[in-house]
Amino acid sequence: MIGDDPLPRELAPGIFWLGGCLEQRFQGQTLHSYNSLYLVAGDDASLLVEAGHPQDSELVLAQLDELLQGGVAPLRYIFATHQETPHAGGVGALLRRYPDAELCGDVRDYHLFLPGLAERLRPLAPGERLDLGATEFVALDATIRDLASTRWGFDTRRRVLFCGDGFAYSHYHQAGHCGMVAEEVPELPVAEMTALFTELALYWTRFADIEPYIRRLDRVLDERAVRLVCPTHGLPITELGITMPAIRQGLRLGSEGGARAAAAHAAAHAGARDRASGSA
Amino acid sequence: MRTEGSPKASPAQPRDGLGDIADVVELVPDTLYALANPYAVDGSVSWHPSDVRGYAPMNCYLLKEGSDALLVDSGLPVHERSVLRGLDELLAGGERLSLFPLRVGEFDSVCNVAAIVERFAPQAIYALGVVAGPGWFDLGRGDSATRRADLEATEIRRVGASDVIALGAAGTRRVEVFEPALRLLNTHWVYDPATRALLTSDMFGHAVRTTAAGPWVVDVDDDVTTQADVEWHMLATRYWWLRGARTDELRRGLAEPFERHDVDMIAPAFGCVIRGRELVARHYLMVDEVLRRAPRLLDAVDPRDGLARA
Image (cartoon, rainbow over all chains, first blue to last red):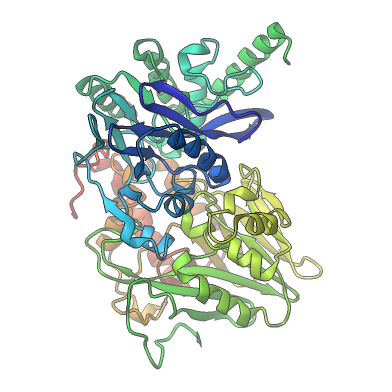
């Protein structure tokens, strides 16, 4: 986590945003990207989406303690979207802190990563559900992913999509974007930032035809009637009609290899904004 | 136990994790070693296709030059004791150790960094520029404060997309590190001119064995890998996205290090080491053939589509 921590934040009743920012240098700029986790509270049990970046483990444990001591239902499940350390690096610390919790999702590999904790792995295939009490968490196939083992998740009551590396984009810490949802920072160039993140972290997209992925993404959002999108690296999206066009544009830009030009464009945006706000 | 890639005299019995039967494989005497720690390939590991059966090693490579030693990757936590034991043996001369995890965001590359730092107090960790601090290597095992303090006491040296790590008192062994064209996540490959070894991280990890005893080096007289094996290994695991992809640039990028260097050995992070110029050429061509065929394959957009062995 860099700087003051604006999280946890309740995005919808019982949907809590946790985690911290990762500072990145790109072409002389300092950007932030979230390494977010989300606590999904039901009436009987809670589920944590993602296990966090290893450097944030103590921060995340403190955020979780705050919520759980405040009356949120006990943590029973940890759902790491995939086995990269920015998504799953905190799983060992979490399983040790919360002895009643299980790690679920595609749990291959973890018997080698977590010796002694292998009995607490619970496979959760796409389409399978966990009953949290008055809501269910459904594992989904991932549309935008790096590791093939990636799963997305969906909360049925609040209609929230948890999409791992999907909808990933950086933001500007100095401009006060940390802890904000996408629609609260309309000046953030989401398309350009999405393209930049795509170039940095979703390298394969520059070799693929991105259009089928975008169509499938739209289909998932439509079929599930998604109201809130909770990405691991981007700011949460509360108004899909406002932000989705920029996400689509960013995926296309990144896939077309236009991200460097996009970053220069974003830097120009940021410079103008910072000068206007006096924070540059 | 130290071997030269040959079967052990007393193969250990396979068991879950296989944590205590590692080999120290001498690839080039006094110069390059593999700490080869086997695991079962049984559908429980995502970097092998779910229907492939056998055993493979998770490899760390130790490059030794005079009083310097560079450990590439750190192995799996289930192998922590054997990795440390192997390093105890290989660093008995008091060599100054540095670490270089080739994929900083993946468990198999970084998981034992903290344990190695605690035991050997290395002089530096080489890491991709995105790494902001030692917290990247703190996977939450053992006492947190002590572990973080040990890590914070270790210098992190940032490595660019194309760089050199100099080993030896005079810095004469210049190990080339570079970002490969064919990668999934942030990755470096390493070329060591002294041994003509190309360390390829998550690529070329397709060679597995039928027993937990190895051997963990494939030579020309015992290579049973087929073109179909290589294709299935790539497309059913980390390189799923090649289906239907544009691969011309990737083919040129794959060829570049093989054209620029004499490569006598391909040393992947997992799977057997591929040794010998003839065998290196064969396996390079098999990967290139996958790239050549990939654009014509069914698109990879839906993870449920097309994942059947050809």
